[in-house]
Image (cartoon, rainbow, N blue to C red; front, side, top):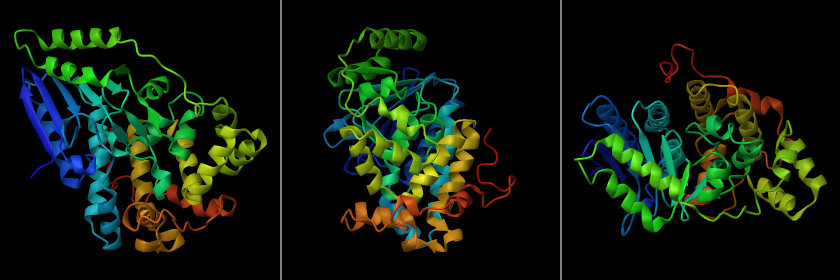
Length: 367
């Protein structure tokens, strides 16, 4: 049974992610179903716009998508299952399709929106969040990096906030995401169902008219916003530094409660991946989305099969991170190396060497 529900109603393609027990975490089947539906609707003149939402155990909304299915990542990596390679190739291809979609694509980002959930929403024409929205790219917590185009969209956040979000995995509320350019409109969660229903409620009105009404309603919403403590001025002064040790030293020198919290967070993340992620964000800032996704496809191969460090399966940083968080749940990953200060350039640079030629790259055709 598919965990994607889709229908065409009054010219609108409606998609509901329907795997609520897993917070709609994306399986390979879901990625494939989403891609098939979106390509079919892209070429169907009866579909003039697309809207996507998540569901919780009680019904629609309340949760959007918690990311990729990391339990699957773990089992597939340990078993050397080729489906793991397929997942990332096909997920990144889906991300590119959404970013380049020729029809309006509206993401109702209510509830959890993390990792892969950001990948299927950041390319939307309209990104709607609520007071229940919790957004993040927390991949360094599992020895991974912010993928699904994360290098592209995080590097375009104001100042050094992209570096901060990528390295720490800081969670944002809906209003925070708007401030950082990662969402467009904030509405009350009690109202989001009405906005969804009204998109396809009156077929006597043109789709253009209904989309215009939606935008007017979104413009009329005036939420109260208070800047969170984590959005400190120190983000730009510390996280704009060229290297992770420089960022750490800047935080030590700042010596504020916020800086100490940041340091504590960074000390819990994978030291190796912190260095890789900072380089990812720096490089992605000057890349097209397609080139960023190709780079990220290279990176994810190296994360699970880290040949230059002679590590794969259980010994890879990512499998160890997932083990500690989701399998054994001891929350004590044994990072290797264990200290930020022990990472060398020779450990980091090979992550950015593609294992494929330009012609053989699994995402070679993305433009």
